[in-house]
Each structure stands twice: as structure tokens, then as C-alpha cells.
Length: 448
Image: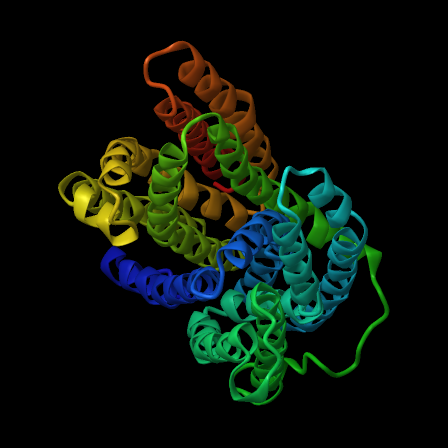
């Protein structure tokens, strides 16, 4: 990395890293979207089953996969410090960790999901579909977690386009296998919602095999010889991965699970209110892919700069990420304020639900600025390997402040269901301010 790069070229470098990450994240998002869409066209009960199954799958998977994201700053700093000999053992130990994580989730699905589903007030057919969907997904756990480790390797080298091409190649294949297994086309068994789970598992194996072939023979990855000279399990390296990765994973789990909790609390309101809330949440989740991608790009570039001892560059990349995300947030606010009704109309033709969603979008617009600050600041802190404060603030922002404030506002004011969004906005604003202060402290006192 060249310390003499002007800010304009650093901005271009950041954009070059972030764009493939964004495309990858949207493609991953669309895979789950098509699972639900294609199952919905098959049967209402199967749609409900897949929706329930996804609500279990997404927080658990994203949280545990987040642990493997700890590899990204570790490898990025090795690359920046030109200690390439440490890259292979880091990736190999990450793959070992991925095996353990996949075993943990498989055990959870095998032993814990059935009792939880049994305790929920679900119709029997919905419960069966949810369990079968998760069972099908579980066969893809090992390649999914292992791929996450390899993706951290690709991304840490700045080769984010590799992950993008792999996912773009596999996404239409996933849709095609859904077509075969959900509906029973071309002589394949008609599995309904469970078919979406098995299709995802097959796709995960495909993704992993493609990633292995790229890491084995592709340039510049072949020089690292990732699959040669396998070392024994090193708990010292596991400790490094887990020390960074566990706070990342927990903070991601805390963030994703709080939205599931809000959705459950919304069950006190009408079906129309719940549907409108889901519309606003679904669309803002899509918008969030941009600050999330900028956050991941900041982790890579800050990590490489810190590894190379180029602290001025690290600081520049940190605040370029924040500035870029804020710029996009103003665009998102304008979109949400100007096109609320057309956006809601994409999801439903029910006029009452559209009008409720339009109101939710007002609060979603207020959500954007805090989200735009917090996400890239978190990414920059991870680049510095400073992850504990993000973990602590995730808990405080969402569960100590956001959810209680939301509950009290929803229960004791005239805002009703919109109060939950007020709580989340308040909690996220506190988190954004606190983490920005933490970033400034790290840059000034520990990496100056």
C-alpha cells in the first residue's frame, strides 16, 4: 500500500473494494428472498414454515459466521506487515474452527429446534415444514462455514471480486435447484418448503468447492499453498481468532435477534400492522447492505494499513468509510421520504397496509443516519482489532436501551407500534456516538 496515495485515490480504492462486497451481500440476501418467494407460490403453510425456519436460521448463522469474520483483520494485518508465512496457518486454523462451529449448529438443529417449535403456537403442518427446512439446510453447514473462512482470506487480500463472482455464479443455480426440489419438476421429488432447505445446502457445497478451486489454483492465491502442510490444531491461534471473532459474532447476533424480538412483540397488533412493519424492515434491510459493505471494506483497508504501520492511511480509510456511508444515507432518506408509497406498493396491493407502511418508512428514514455512522465505525475498529467495545455497545444499544425504550414508547404513548422504531433509533444513535468516540480514542492513544 502506498502511503503517498492522495485522498481521491484512497476513495477510489475503497470504492473498488466495497462494490464487489455490496454485490455479494445483495446476492446472498436474494438467495433467502427467493427461498421465501418460491415457497410462497407453492403453498401458504410451506411459506409460513420456511419463514419460521429462517427466523431461527438467520440470527444463529450470522452470529456464528461472524466469529469467522475475525480472520479478516488478522490476515489483513499479516498482509500489510508482509508476513505472508503466517497467512496459511491462520486460514487453516480458521477452517478447523469452522468445522467446530458447524458441529455446534448441527447439534442445535438436531436437539434444540424441535422442542422450541413444539412450544410455539403453530399449526402442525407449519411446524413440520419449518423442521424439515432446517434439516435440509443443516446438510450445508460445513461447507457454508468453511467458505466463510475462505472468503475472509480472499477479502483480506483485497480480492473482494472473487467472492462476488462465486456468489453471482451460485445464486441462479440455487434458484434452479429450488425450482426442481420445491415443485418436483423434471422428475425430482416434490419437497415444498423443505426443498428450499436442501437446495440451499447443495448450493453451499457448490460455493465451497468453487472457492477451494480458486484458492488452490487462482492467482495470487496459489502462492499461499493453503491446502499444503496442514498443521495440528493450534489453540493459541484459535484464541486469537476467537478473541477477535466472538465479540464480532455476538454483536451481529445481538443486532439480528433484536429485530426478531421486535417482530414477536408486534404480535400484539393487527396482521396489517405486522405486515407493514415487515415491509419497512425488509426494505431497510436491503438498504443496510451498503453501510454493511462499506464496513467490511473499512476492516480490510484499515487492517492492511495498520499491519504496514501506516497509521495515517488507516485513519483516512476509517473516515472515508464513514463519509461515504453518510452520503448514501442522505440518498436513502430522500428515497424513503419521496417514494414511500410506491415502495410499499411493490410488496402489497392492500391499501390499508400500504398506508401503515408509509408511516413506518418515516421512522425508517430517521434510522438511516445513525446506521450509516455506526456500521463503518464498527468496521474500522475491527481493522484495528478493537472489537470488545462494539460488542458491549451492541448489547447496550439494542437490548439495554433500544428494546426497553421501544416497549415503553409503544405501550405508554400514542405512537403504538411505531414506538419500537423510536426505541431502536435512540439506541442506535447512542451506539453511533459512543463508537465514534472510541474510534477517535484508539487512533489518538493506541495507534498514533
